Length: 174
Image (cartoon, rainbow, N blue to C red; front, top):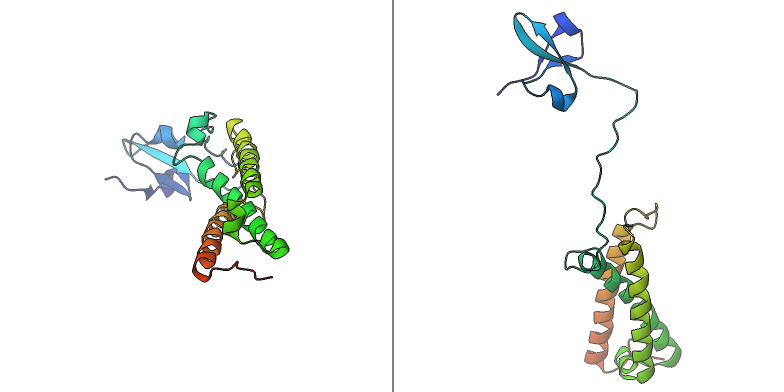
């Protein structure tokens, strides 16, 4: 295994000798040194930085977006859970209906189907256009926070249902 060695006599401070065959990878030039070919690389401070490596563009296939490990399923489920959790608590506080009675009513099922359709389409359209949630993230609102909030909302809905099943009463008693 070849090691890097300083070559102060040929290139000055900040130069190093790299293994053979690595000149093209590092963009360095080779210099003759003591009858052998040596590769000299100089560190450069300041100046323009190298562009970041190209990321592969996100697939615009609906099947790739909806795949088990794709970007859409957890994000859509999390968004629906966040809306559902807040709505369930608001209806419980306003009318006194528990989560399970909301799901059993015809009005609750219609609103649920409408919400699923609208939020699913609104979540899929940017993904099918090649955008990613990470690319649209800001300082406070970022993709990782959205995933965690969605996960906690999913757990919150399960906790609301479990509380109502165990106690026989809505979480918020009016």
